[in-house]
Amino acid sequence: MTDKELVIEAINAMKNSYSPYSDFKVGAALLTENGKVYTGCNIENVAFGPSICAERVAFFKAISEGEKNFSKIAVVGGKNGAVTSPTPPCGVCRQVMREFCSDDFEILIVRENENYDKVLLKDLLPQSFKPEILSK
Ligand code: THU
Image (cartoon, rainbow, N blue to C red; front, side, top):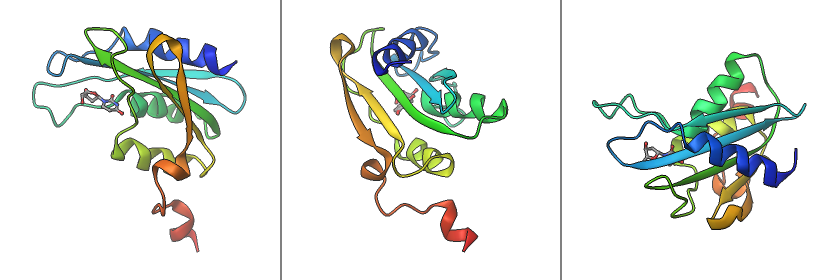
């Protein structure tokens, strides 16, 4: 699975977004270390609080299927079903990523035309509160 293929998986997942309140569709594609892909989209709710981001849907699908080791995630978002802006993961999703991934986990933040910026989790969530702290 190339980075570009993972980006395309995220773009396809975006189409399933349920986002009638923000009209901002997000798709994510999470790659496991053994090459399997779990996708997610944002799912909103009329009460707002129960809404969930695309990244966490992808993670929770994978975790609930027994996956534990992840190498990267691609994230794409925008208005009116198009990729209108880069969509860096929100703070809650970054913390969820740090629960299951190392500092070197890769995040592909998609821009227009399937282009992307690759960033590391340690740069998105520096000085993180991480599982290793409680295990000491
Ligand atoms: N959203 C995501 O799915 N992922 C992010 O990283 C940022 C925000 C969703 C939440 C909400 O449904 C919509 O985008 C607008 O905030």
